[in-house]
Structure formats: structure tokens, C-alpha cells
Amino acid sequence: MSATDAEITIPGSIFSHSVVEDPGSATGWGVVEGVVAEAVAVGSFTPARAHPISGFGELHVSTSIPGQDQRLSPYTDNERAYAAGFIEAWLTAPEIHATGLNLHCQVNCDGR
Image (cartoon, rainbow, N blue to C red; front, side, top):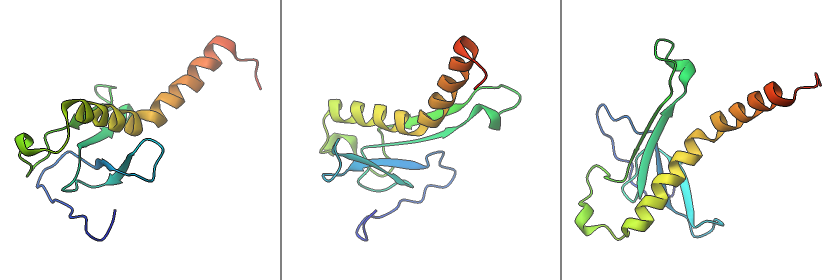
């Protein structure tokens, strides 16, 4: 996050990360911690182990950024949809990887 980025404080907000444009990255998008004014999408994820009663993780993603008028957004619907998928993948990648490792061992585990 640059010095010009303004983090938005939202009381009771469930969001922990923002997708922003990052021309230096291969995809043109990047993820920063917090909710920032120029966010295209925001999201948060709490893994299943944090919810012992339900056993399900919680993923929250939004392209309606608090404090932004979506009618004036410089981003197209396609860009916002892509950013929503980007933050979902970024937040859940460790859990997906762990699931893949566990499944591989159950299907083809030779003890090594």
C-alpha cells in the first residue's frame, strides 16, 4: 500500500483485505491488507477450524465498497467480477492446498 492510499475504518467490518490495481504484477491486480479507498473488491476468510460448531469456513466477498458510489466506479462489471474471484482465490488458497494434500494422501499415500 502506498503512502497515498487511504485506509477506511469501518466499525464492525468483516472485511480484512482489498484487491487493488497493481500494474507491476503479472495479473495487473494485487491484494493489500485492510479496506482501502481504491479497492475493486474486498474480502475476508475465516477457516473451518475457527468454527468448531459448524465446521465450515466463512468467506465474505464484496464489490460494493463502503464509501464508494458504484454508479461512479471506474471499473466495469467484468473487472469487479474478476477482482471478486481474485480475492476469493487469494484468501482461500492455503485451505485449498491443504485439502489437496490431504486428499492425495487418502487416495495415493505410500507412507513417505
